[in-house]
Image (tube, rainbow, N blue to C red; front, side):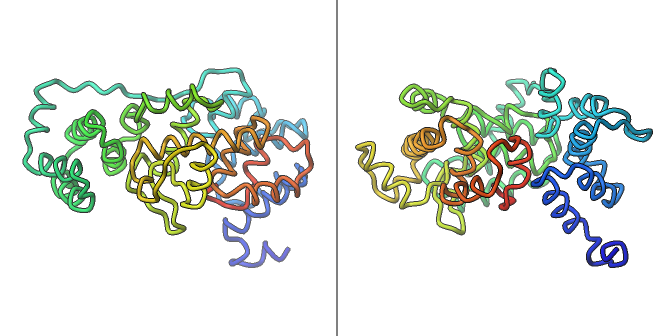
Length: 315
């Protein structure tokens, strides 16, 4: 009643919190109640459609507006999103990646590579002048159309300046060029580290891509550094445990960063008995927090509920 009569309490983020509280206790009728309190635009999002299907499935409901849980899952399975992938898993379908292959003529790439601004940007980047390189890149690409941005992004990917390729796709809303958005960056080093640990290559790629978008000079407000966003203290202890020579500034060397990040990820996988969800969460938020979050949950909680109710949005 309070929420129904209060504009402030009807804010979507308040209702999001109430949905998640209901998920924690697996009160599926309350989950549906709060989902119905969301605005129509919010209710149509993949996230909340997925939880509607989950709640309906748990309560064995079918309704006139949404059909059956299976119908909702099948519709979501057409989307490239976390919830689309979860829905695909539930329906035994392949993921819908909605990928557009990059098709650029060699002459178009040569024309792009000859642009003075991109030449300068590349040289500055190779010399480690990241700020100036970034300025040249932004100035040169700021008015480019979609085709040119794809060419510039592909060029950056081929150079190994992966972060700029990703940024080019973001700036042009070019979400379907997945080979540029999700490049197999530093592939040799990743596969080498996978062979030395129990960490699969895809998990190393995924953590580096999510933590820094493959920006080798990334530094977070909390002090995490480099490609896999390692905290200096974590890097130091990981290096010591694995007999690796290490100085703090080495974290901006992509190969060194991948090496330490992979060893640390391996350590977390060991700590959490191979559970990639807990290891990835601990990598981002710290094992002490994950241990606390696990302690507050029943041991048999479904993995999708556990992920949805992590208190840190970033994690």
